[in-house]
Length: 48
Length: 544
Image (cartoon, rainbow over all chains, first blue to last red; front, side):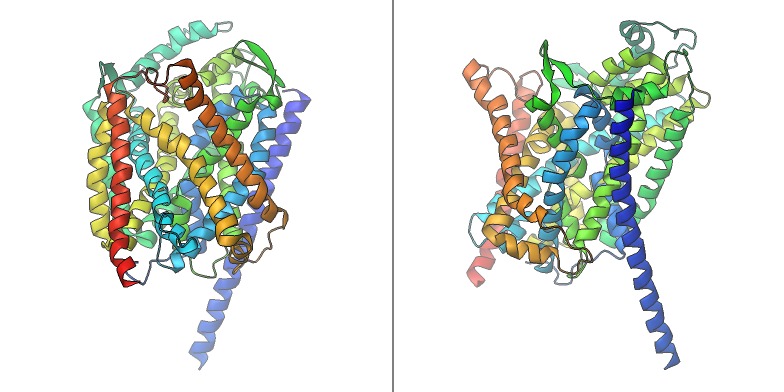
């Protein structure tokens, strides 16, 4: 593959890869926060 | 709304993202994309591809998610109800019929095509596909020799499997028919189980499996080395796909790829097809969201998952595998023969040369089957939602009624020559840009861009750059308008001028009564759906 091919491929893969990891990082971190909140609520409930 | 006030909801956010990704990821990611990219300038094609992605696909995707959630909160899972809720005009709901017509037609032929992948997977697993002559392949074979000596048995097998033309009919194997019935029953069963117990569970199992299988196959393809000759290997396939070709041949003339309208149309068409935009399916899935669910982030996650599967995984499978065994010249010929030739003829032949090739072939077809199945249920869901929300059926009744219609109408695709091609032309090629154009005008201009913008950001953790507001309001409709006008010019105006409009089928198949029968079926289906909408709203208008 010539250098132009490598550049096009790397740019396209990076754009798609970054978008993918950025979106899923936020999804999973949001889910973790939500899960933790639910657990905290449950713990508070059981203490009462 | 006639249905139950308590609409079903997605159980988890990850389930929703995977189901939406399953809706988008289909055969197009693994078969259509590499072929289109290779045909339209390789790396150079990625420029219009990403411009279409930013200016058209991303704004449309967010608009469809927003419209879906907006409609779902008012008890509507399909576009007739959503359009009516956004535009208080009597005709709004009838225009919205396009949004149930498209997925209902697509699901009829897509299920049949999707069933081929399962049938091929079974044949491959049992090692019943044609055998390749290991000694026949050698360095320096011309594409014609490869087609005649290596690929022909697989092509003949495909013709036998998918139906041999006999007049206006197709002669189909009993096995093909039974596999189709099995896929149909499986799909109806999943739909009858509902959103969280059927579609969401399927997505949670199928999507991770799909990604794992795709990664295994990509690794296998890139460890092929130079199986036939030191002159070519899988990296040459990547070169074929990614090296920009600024000048390509079209109709015997050399054209600059970025100034050729066909390249832009192909890039935009691929965007619609791959992201399932303008199919009415995204709105339907989004209608099962909670009011404050983040559509900005989840929409972006599903889009990125689809692009990951297409650009990274889809581009690294079929073409590099074909190039490694048959060389660049033959890979070019294979890519130009279309998606089915690439997926059902060349890939089984490639795997035929490898140890445990039948197992790898089965993995390949199972990957395609998972991609197809998740898209099938997504395309069927709008009709289920329409019957539930607007007609008042229970989910089980809706699944049974749709299943019967699905079974009967599929026979047009199975037994009539050109049946599925006619359906694909109207519902899969012409319909989506039309529906998308209507949607964007309705939301940004009739309902109001500012209201939509506010609705989009409800519950959002990220703020969408204002650039997309202006893009959705001005650029996207112009982009879509140009696509539709060009389509009209190429397919309607030019054939009328040439005098071939009634003699040559627009759908790319030979004209005959089978083509007219399918067209009539589509016409009556559309009219029937309009009548259903009329009946569903009649009582409501009186009470309102």
